[in-house]
Length: 142
Image (cartoon, rainbow, N blue to C red; front, side):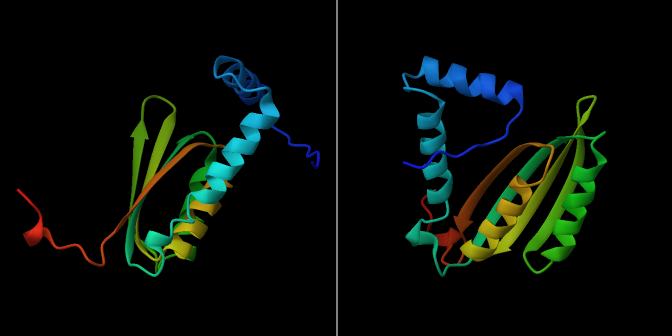
């Protein structure tokens, strides 16, 4: 098995070690391997391929970290064919939340989410994806 060196903040490393201990993992490598498999598998759902999807992506960041807000603006413009709507809100004393509504295919949504996740200083990135190409509200049970 290959050995990989990964840089991460001390606080995240402590949380990783604590998680491993609390959940019975043999160590942090096992946690990282499982997390990697889960991340890579997120967008491999064949039921979503070649379908029209709607995605909701939320990003939380410290408002004093101006590079995150600027990066969000660049991503919105870079993917204007995918971003149907965008909402910015202040949360608490020091945070901002950016919400993106996306309309497109799985590969495009996956690329967009990956770019947001790769943004330095983004505190959390959450998303959900639902197919809308065969949505029929009339046939839904009440």
